[in-house]
Length: 87
Image (cartoon, rainbow, N blue to C red; front, side, top):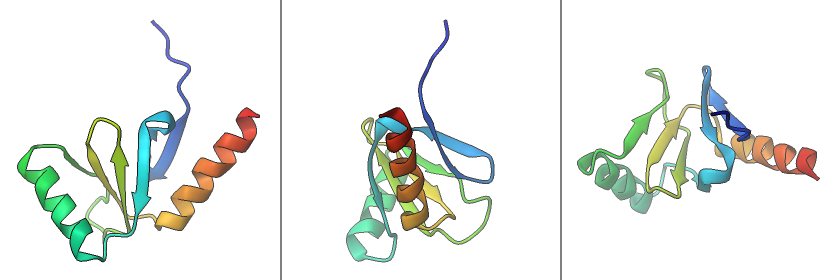
């Protein structure tokens, strides 16, 4: 079984399936901190920072929350670039 899914590089060799991404947000606001805590409580938090500071939070359609050390703008531009290549 092969998957022709597009992957989105979120730093340090980690990737997520691009079609599953619902939002890419900055972690600094209180609602985003609650989102992170709630995901952790529900075992839906994935820390892909490799011990570095969290600079973006990626929310997937399965309600998983992925932490990344890459800026949200950088990840969003990578996602846009991937969409442009599809067209």
